[in-house]
Image (cartoon, rainbow, N blue to C red; front, side, top):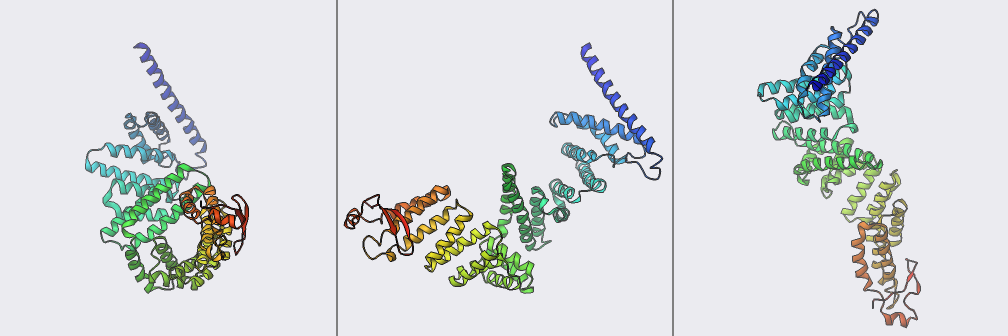
Amino acid sequence: MLKMFNSRYLETMKFIKSVLFVCLLIAMSILANKVQAQTSESKYGADSVTCVMNNSLYYEFYKQWKASNYKNESWKDAFEPWRWVFSDCPKSTINIYLHGEKLIKEVIKNETDKENKEKYIDTLMLVYDNRIQYFGKEGYVLGKKGVDLYKLRPTAYEEAYNILKKSISLEGNKSGGPNLIYYFRSAEKLVKAEKAEKIILVDIYDQTSEIIEYNLKEYQAKDDTKNVTNWENIKGNIEVSFEPYATCEDLISIYTIKFNETPNDVDLLKKITKILDKKDCTNSDLFFQATKNLHSLEPTARSAELMGKMFIKKEDYNMAAKYLQEAIDLYEDDNDRADVHYYLANVYFQIKRYSQARTNCYEIIKIRPNDGKAYVLIGDMYASSAKSCGDNDLTSKVAYWVAVDKYYKAKSVDPSVAELANTKINTFSQYFPANETIFFYDLQKGDSYTVECWINETTTVRTSD
């Protein structure tokens, strides 16, 4: 027992000495600089010695609390000296706010009196305000403030909305995921309370989706699986929240009014075409008119692509091909070009311009060698043109050989198309020439054979037997 007492005594004395030593150093520093700073208040406040002492006291208890994984009650001992520092020398260190945020939240969690709890929530909001005042980072700190206000005081959703709106405006792509989620939720409450129109939810969905996609691409490029998963979850949360407002009927109703008011507003047209395309509402007259106006006013790769898709829907494949080719010429990103090449290949396939369709498929493969869809599409072209490429029992079936070759190639480079490729292999292998047919034309299984017509590819003789 005596050993334990001595140990505690020594630890206490060591702590007191360290606090007094720090106080002495700060006091000496302040005295040394007093002549140069007589006209300005020290960051340690009017009573610098007490400021340093309370900073050290609260921090010592805070460290003990942290060391316990925030499970013991050292936060209670930390709170009073922290409150003195927060009130009397708020500029002394940013730790006042970093630690204060956690301390106040613990106080709020443990407070049972409703009135006192509300006062502590006000204090937490003041912690954020003072942090901005003395240490900046307004956009970042406002994000934390808005999220906590929404969670701790749900009735203050309108104030939380305005705080988060400003935060996201300032932070842009640096906005935190929770900020985006609670920004949408606070706006949703505004709409339900009939304090705002549904269109703000569409606008917020558009705005937050851009931020989410930016961060997903950033972390995917860095191979940061943890953050990719985090942003995927945020994306899913926003999508689920937006779903009740994402029907084509709602979107078209909301945006038709806006479009009729300002049909040549480029920013509005971009928003309309982007949202309607994303939500597969492209059969509407609104999408047609907005796309047409946008491409007329500000032709871009994106608007050209949308025009192409629009004409695909109308089954006007010649016009679709014209605009899709324009999009390919305008796009700078290889992946964007590859996506449009795929649409264009399908368009040419529809109008039986097989050579041009295949050329577009090979353009995709140049950019994305492991894109199995491109090989599947070439195989489909070969199978589709088999009968027209021959005039007898052999030549009208040999194209199935090269079609199946392409399906095998597709699944070898891209496992995601394996199931589809296997189905097609099983289907078209049944159309191979029979044994007696190849024998009649002096061929044997395993022989090399060149399929002519527009295809011009060499393959291996096989039979359906």
